[in-house]
Length: 465
RNA sequence: GGCGACGUAGCCAAGUGGUAAGGCAGGGGUCUGCAAAACCCCUAUGCCCCGGUUCGAAUCCGGGCGUCGCCUCCA
Image (cartoon, rainbow, N blue to C red; front, side):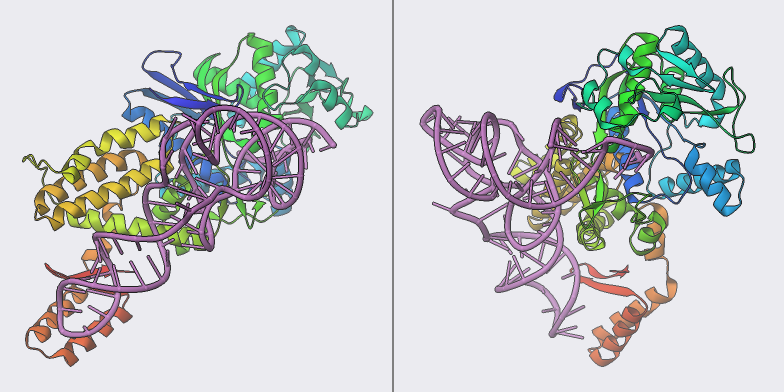
């Protein structure tokens, strides 16, 4: 049984999907107007892990993640760079998709864009007007917050506070300060669409209500995003969907913690975001991926290259055992030892960790423990058995966490013929006790970026270290 | 100011009532021609502080202190 923490009720409870055997997920995606930073990678990687776990547990997953490919920031950036807004969005969407691919993030089943859903959005707004949940002010349309008795519950806010907190801008034509725009008029020389209320663009929150209901139905299982989206975005989204459908859209609200750097939140507006391209120039994408999973998804993560590299050393230990075991066939014998039992029962414990609110941090601890059991088996002369189970267990864990190097990564480490020939020459020299020659070859290889590992089974070349 | 989260070893981090997972770094060892790598062993009588509840608290309650987030765009 999977248990999930729900931000609305602030409790962890058992997950029962709305439709047996199926899970529907809506995750708020990015606004593509700048390069994605680590903060954007976290929800993507976390939801990838969550989705894989559901699949592993036998669910059919329907996963939607949108692109907000038109809004004020895109328009502004479009002016600054003298690039049409649609081309700008397209460009950063492609880059985002490429970055996610490098992080082994499976694409969502649907990646709808606002610009492709304007009609649906207009219909949604019209529906809210028909239900007396919204009103027209000039060429704008606003949602009337006081029509929702439960408004503020998700973010823990009270309406009267919200009225006090914000000063009402009379020019905006809002009746109450807390009301928010569903449709905003735009100058004719800016991107926009004709609507019953005039030329303009949709407000930020309405797109998600319109798209989630279209792709997943009026009610779906999980709604995700960064914890910074709770207010106002998710609060408003919830109000919109309740306003039109008179039911709770999401069964669980699932929010990931934010990434900070030196204790300060990373954000595009602050300009302190660390770009994914830059990070992955220095560190293997899989190390970054697993680093984001090395912490529970709701815990804030203070990002540093040092921390990333430290974690990477642990991952590289996993890779070595994988190298060692990858060709090993499945074991058929039965060994009655504690370490053998631990190898046999690994998967149960591993999946249990993930059942408990997707605790990937604990799941990784199980992987490291499992490695230890495998080495115990090797020490006790059960090499084939231990490696066979290690391979099996690593593959099982890899289905969800996805940390093993792909074939490309392995081939670069093994197919350099020149290096292998040099290694053979060194072995020859060592056998002849010509250690001067042997050491010269070794330092040559080291300069080329190789590490020689003299194992009991002979030398091995590892590229990079 | 309001709401919320967090504070666990040198660093990162699990654990939400039963006697402190895991990773990195560090120390010792095995292996090795030497080294490196790998593997093995060790490393928090204590979980920000002070009270309280309990047979028992990192975990629950109260009060502090500190850091961060949201309240405007934000993953």
